[in-house]
Length: 471
Ligand code: FAD
Ligand code: NAD
Image 1 (cartoon, rainbow, N blue to C red):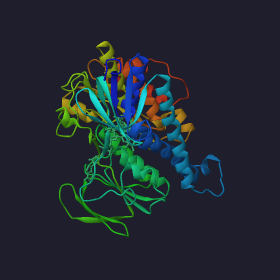
Image 2: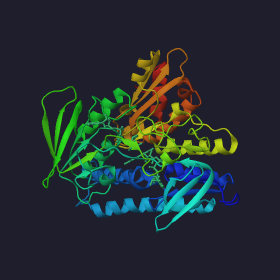
Image 3: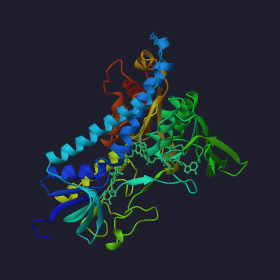
Image 4: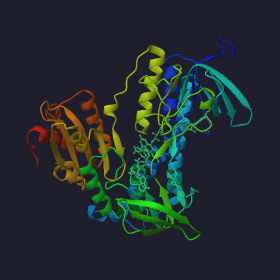
């Protein structure tokens, strides 16, 4: 390619990491090309992850609430029916609107979009197998790998996305399974268990560890949400591993065993969801052609400026280190472009919120109590239950609490953990507080509007160093 044809940045992958980097680079006046093979932009998150799952969570919650939580509010409804086809259609509309929106933003910011599969030919050249047939190549001064992740398969249980499914199958089932077994009680497992249980499935979640919620969730919070979800009708088998599974025309039989070894049992299901984590995706990327190696978990190895050992090739998002979260990918994408353009960038990895969109939601930021104990940190705990919050009482949604952890000597906030309606929105306040190095007293002395759920946040802060007013 001539100098004029060489792009400032070529991005492989148009997921959250890739598309955000592309827009940012366009805004910075760079000549940028983004290669995506899916046919639509937005990656896992917009197409088969965050967005479709939240559509199903929202609408299945409404359905469940109308059925089971409306009469005592003074709302009597007649014949309530589930129209699963329409529920899926609503989901598809949300997805299509957002993916097309990204395409519009590409045009607005002058990003070139190539629909195809990219692979390294050499350190500056990416070969693209076009979706419409044919091949082209593009050269870049800088390259960004943003190829994301895929579901980790369960050995011996072949995924067909009908009977043995990943999250991709779980957001597109054509009928409500009578019995759904979920392998893995992490975020995907619990969100999907909630959706299908609300729509009428008998759901059993099998989790290897003694605690549900996946990595990072505070143990007290995990116990509490497990109780709440159990009350909603989800069965749990914690401390239990799935040893193997057999698929037949009748369904799937899982052989399960206590994690510590014990009496083997079987669990019958019509559909099995495999939700045991995700793994980085680098298939067909041709990393071998440029001598880039992966770590033991298949992640692309990078330094603190997102550079691989070939400095003009950087990498962000699920395919490299850190939590597999869309907002983490987004932060990294902006920072990586800033490193290229300006030489500096910023992501605070101690301050990345997590949200599980069950009902009630679970959200946290910073360290858990078990993290602090392990690190030998001297800390104080303040909690405030939503059962003592006026807005929660008014809304008749009183399950959950806010829990704050602060340094015993300096009162600096170290972690915030919430179970409650809207916890996912409320955690933004906690994230800001943590980012700015606030103390619990800083929050407690900040005026919060009444009556709001956020007052529980303020009162948990009060409870950390003094006493809350309403509990
Ligand atoms: P991806 O989104 O996986 O995008 C990578 C893209 O690269 C893909 O579109 C792929 O087709 C493309 N690609 C790969 N190789 C090539 C190639 N060689 N050439 C061209 N294109 C290629 N995170 C949250 O923060 N909140 C949530 O609520 C949430 N919910 C989720 C629900 C589910 C069911 C799942 C599965 C995930 C969820 N996540 C959530 C995680 C989130 O989706 C990921 O963290 C995020 O998508 C990572 O973005 P990424 O761009 O790194 O990777
Ligand atoms: P995860 O790592 O959160 O949870 C997997 C769970 O499966 C763990 O608790 C693990 O102990 C368990 N497990 C593993 N092997 C098992 C076995 N053989 N038997 C029983 N249990 C077993 O992974 P996930 O839930 O698949 O999610 C994947 C990624 O997607 C995560 O990084 C998650 O953060 C992200 N995601 C985020 C959201 C959100 O932010 N709301 C939603 C969905 C997915």
